[in-house]
Length: 355
Ligand code: 13P
Ligand code: SF4
Image (cartoon, rainbow, N blue to C red; front, side, top):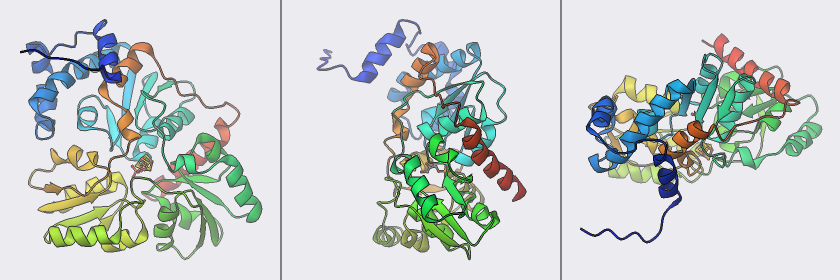
């Protein structure tokens, strides 16, 4: 057989570089060492692809020990990351809480940049790495410090609740953070009858239904969730009349009104594990149902999802490269760390009181 290669992709380049230092052949030994992981992902990853992933997974897990590193991975990471190399998985709140407890000296954040910054804020003395620092977020890039200061000037004395999907600099000029799992609790617990809640207009509108307080928001949106419509839900109901439909609160309110449950990524996973519907559509990022499928036998996951291009910048090659070269290191200006950290810590503290 003759194989003709037209052009090398960046991933081929990375693999070629990595192959100089690691054995990336799919040997019998690697097959055996990774078989318990494959058992969990085999319905999602064909054997032919596994022969590429398994050597990387093996090398990453070895290198983690050598470098005293821990991998924190968001629920939107691919199954080979989520099941293969992550030490801790979760939603934004869970990852922030776990970041306060890690013992290792190096954190590799498999998620987007604001998540890595949050880990750094909570661990200023540790090395925090992100395998691709271009992994951004349309919400985080929708608002600047100047925008927040202008809002504060417009509404003097009104507390500012900021979604964790913001830069550390933005967090530093706000009072408290929230995530999609605790937004209503935080808004209800904070002083005053009016709250500025930034930058996600849809999370703010969905939260407004769970509070008597007046919420002033910002015109930011998640590019993955803002595109879902009530018509999409109606079409899904028509196509799959017996399926339950669940969605993330970054979706527009008319979508949330039309679904059976809405919650953070972790809350959606818990809901599926508890309710065990025969058929379910997760209206969110596509890796969610792939990741949870192996832990919920008997549940049929139907497609109704979008891909987050930022989350998908992280892959096994750049995780191994990141650990190999100890790049890309996430830094936060020391001048803003105390204020930004306080906003995150207040959220964690207020969430604990809600337990
Ligand atoms: P969660 O906090 O629900 O994991 O959401 C993070 C996120 O970026 C969703 O788009
Ligand atoms: Fe940001 Fe949306 Fe991607 Fe989450 S899914 S990281 S909110 S762009």
